[in-house]
Amino acid sequence: MKIRGSIVALVTPMHADGAVDWERLNKLVDWHVEQGTDAIVAVGTTGESATLGFEEHDIVIREIVSAANKRIPVIAGTGANSTDEAIRLTRGAKEAGADACLLVSPYYNKPTQEGLYQHHLAIAEAVDIPQILYNVPGRTACDMLPETAARLSKVPNIIGIKEATGDMERMQKLIDLCGEDFLVYSGDDGIAIESILIGGAGNISVTANVVPAKMAKACAAALNGDTEEARRLDMEMSPLHKTLFIESNPIPVKWALYEMKHIDRGIRLPLTPLAEECRPALLEALKQSGALEN
Image 1 (cartoon, rainbow, N blue to C red):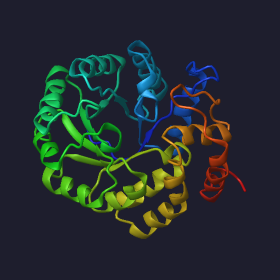
Image 2 (cartoon, rainbow, N blue to C red):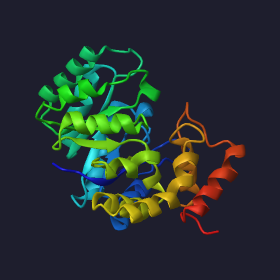
Image 3 (tube, helix red, strand yellow):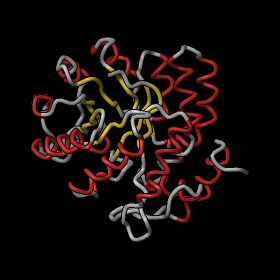
Image 4 (tube, one colour):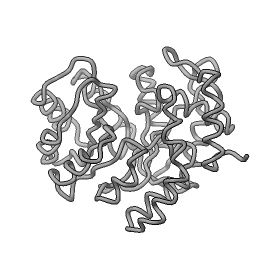
């Protein structure tokens, strides 16, 4: 499986009371298909995976798979800091019909590099589904080094990595160490286009939630070697790359989609709605990027 291009880390729409808004979830999937998004990550960080229970997690994945209806691939977020829990979630995603799974490095308990290797090897051996590693040390307090990713790249059903350090040198090292068949995705919108231009496979994106067509075109241009067009589109989106992290993700992007009338205002504790003082800057970024009219 070679999933490339713009992969949206989809929000999970919720009503004001925090219940999942199934109708708007289906509409979001349709919108992304229409806008040219290449694939969807269901219940990743942006999808508030940390506040969904096991059964709810499975149901959201199943609903997104059903809504996508094989028009674009669905990658399910199934990582956990317990190997047994990650296996349970990954099995659930496979049963729900996901095309692949995205597994964040175990957070909080700070495993060694050997622990990371054994954790991901155990999941890959337990569940026969394509799996993508996810390194985001800013959230997990655990950094999977490129050498560990390279070891794991030799496991047949581990097909790629989402690298969210925002470090171009790290991206280049992963591309060099893991080989051309291993898919290296950017998990940082700010360097995503440049990452693709040096050999990356695509962008697992927060920004794509609000400007899906523009992100899809930028990634396609970069994959096709059209550097000028890719960078031009990226520059138009650049205000969003920063401002969508003005507070913890997905707080800003959910507020943005609410302003764009795509979702209700719901978000689950311990996350809270975007602070009043942050809203003018995000509103301006949405207008500058073309997501909202001036």
